[in-house]
Amino acid sequence: MIGLGRMGLGMSKRLVKKGHQVIGYDVGTQTREKAKEHIGVIESLEALREEVQKVIWLMVPHVAVDEVIQSLKPYLKEGDIVIDGGNSYYKDSQRRAESLKAMGVYFLDTGVSGGVYGEELGYCLMVGGERSAFERAEELFRDLSYEGVGYAYLGPSGAGHFAKMVHNGIEYAFMQAIGEGFELLKESGFGYDLKEVARIYNTGSVIRSWLMELTQKVFEDFGNLEALKPYVEDTGEGRWTVEEAINRAVPVPTIAEALFARFRSRQEKSFRDRLLAGLRYEFGRHEVKRE
Image: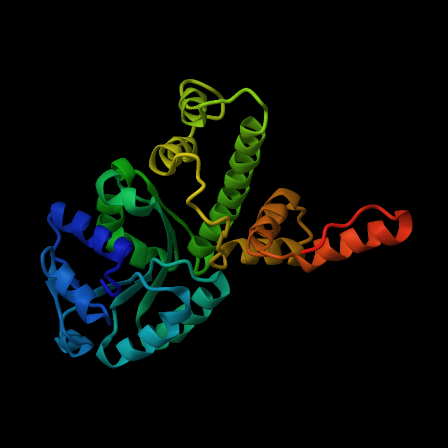
């Protein structure tokens, strides 16, 4: 396992519990030290030089995948399998598969969902690449997956990461809808206990879901949310989803709006809104508020 952060270490620990031998590496010295409590850890990639067939799973940020693969190439041999479990762009995964194929090395792009809870409950795994490589590694996917069935081979190179990209686009839209709905509840004047509303929404209703369970947990952990800054990051998948929809002329207005809402959350002093206020003044002499 290359990359021993929250996801990589959690997946490693789950595999160990299932009887697999896992050796891990991370560029962070402290991260490696922490991981030694749970799995075998190597201090450099030189240790991968041994002449055994390997399955190497990458759990690193998508911007680091090319660099990691390049550093691995001297230690890869024909028949090895490299799995990218991060949130990479599917076209990058197709390119990487072709590059490694020239060396006789298989590449499986694998979308992973389940977050930090996956270590205990299992993950959802979406796999693309050569079917023969998938079949060789299928025991890993089965043992990592939710109830042993939360995985699937979805097609050739790129299919796994494309499916994960769309998954995350849908997630953006779900989260945006929850946020808008609970803001309306908060401003309704009824003085709702929003934690209790989330609980009841999750008890037999048609919108019950894991995200709604997490909504209840948010209110349990953060109360009225005043301690949280309204800044919502995006890590690429939502943008790629909208870009791919544009390229294919597929309308995804809800996902697009959810992405734009994240951009809006980062504007502490919106230039656009200042201009709108100025325009209302100019055409109708509406009052403006000055800082």
